[in-house]
Length: 125
Image 1 (cartoon, helix red, strand yellow):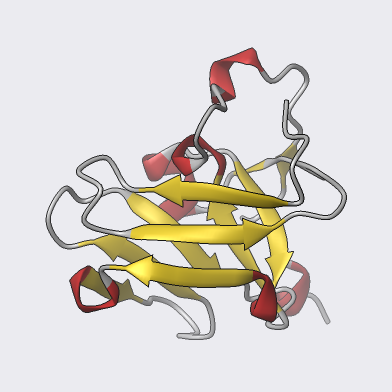
Image 2 (cartoon, rainbow, N blue to C red):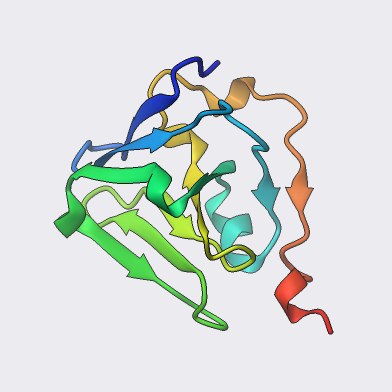
């Protein structure tokens, strides 16, 4: 359980380390069923754009984009772990990989909802 407002996070090899401002703790963790999220399998939560700071390894981060090229998915170029992404549905936020948080085991989270990324809100008329 997250108690601190600022929380440390890292990829698997620790080449990328970052911290997150989480004033409300781990709010609204979720999964997405779009083609990309379904394959990576991460549980994500959100933080404001100014709520994430890369402390180490900015040069190790790589960007992946697809489809509308709106969302920006970042991953470590050394170990391949997805760390965060600028959200398509709310570009003023980053989604981040809950499994990267120090002291958090995502398998202990119960009832994590699955969002409908196949029918993304931005694709609806």
